[in-house]
Image (tube, rainbow, N blue to C red; front, side, top):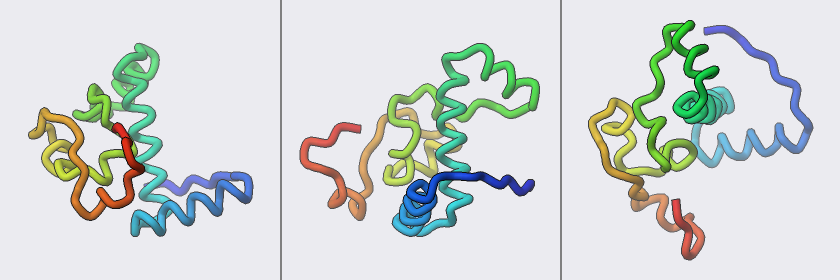
Length: 107
């Protein structure tokens, strides 16, 4: 692993810290997942990013084609199977996370 230093506005640093705490994870891990999802979703539709991933021998994430891929994965009951390509369905919220969804929320 390489160390990457980011300079962010104070409010973004506070937000990242609180988000990581909410997810019971490190800032590094949540940033890696969020950045990866963004890049891989874009690579699914962009030949430039797809080419960069291929040049680096990074396979596109098996979930990149899904509309629900991204932040929703962390609260989905199918994350483990989906991450390895063994679930073809769509997002279903985990019971412990359902209470946090806004009324009428659509993922």
